[in-house]
Length: 93
Length: 93
Length: 93
Length: 93
Picture 1 (tube, helix red, strand yellow):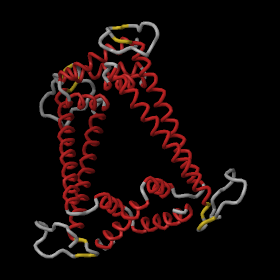
Picture 2 (cartoon, one colour; picture 1 turned 30 degrees about the vertical axis):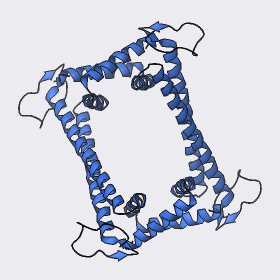
Picture 3 (cartoon, one colour; picture 1 turned 180 degrees about the horizontal axis):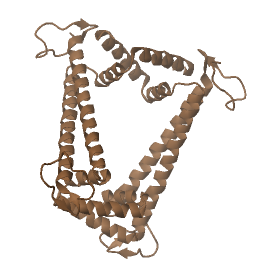
Picture 4 (tube, chains in turn purple, orange, cyan, green; picture 1 turned 90 degrees about the vertical axis):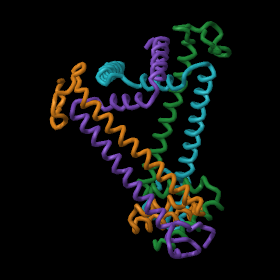
């Protein structure tokens, strides 16, 4: 069966089509498709929250920036903001 | 409270910091962060399935192509494959 | 010749393979490939400048932020920075 | 001057603002911006060619696929197409 490890996948034999473990291939593909569906649904949920935020009067770009900042260490944020200030002043911005 | 619609969000009053509905802002941000965590976890799960596929002897690039094809209408797939053949022959590929 | 407009492309006749204006198709593909090569080269040049910036002691992430800011209107930058401050204070950041 | 190597950059002294080699920083930023402009222009040129291709009756998705195939080794393309056929048959597609 073409060197594919079929253990732990099905109790019985896999349908070998062209030397391929067809059931296993189908299982892999369907699991990926299901997870991709879930990812898409989550992306929709996130979009909905931003729509809610916008209609509540918040600035979505600024909220995204807050989320980015919260992912970083506070000391790292502070250091970069200090540098940003220095560079801006150097450039006369 | 700065014109933000707070209805349906909390029973009590929101903490207004600088005229901002702070609790609502925090709720929005934390919900987005939670969903982003879930998306990241799903991406990891998908990656694991492809790792499994690879060690079972499947070609991951080809599996991805199969998944793309399954998203399209069969008639659309067929039409594009016909055109691809025509273009390749025209180019001597 | 398959309904393709060949005007302004070549003085003579196009090689029709499978009803396809083969020369025109080839010209389109080769022009895209050439432009993609140039884009890739530019991406490499940009990367080199950031490498130079880094070895000159600059913080590349901060330089990227400066470049983003310079693309925006100063009034827009100021407004977003004010909002960012307000949101951060509201969140106790 | 804050450890930044200014050699080979300008004959004279750099304006040190906040300990920063301001001229060098400005030069880096402006060069990146110029290259990014060029990249954007090339992306526009590529888009124009696809618009031309479409109005000449070609299928743009198929042309993109041709371009992808031309980047691969012919033997690699052939191998993947063989596998794609096997997987499709195994899945009854």
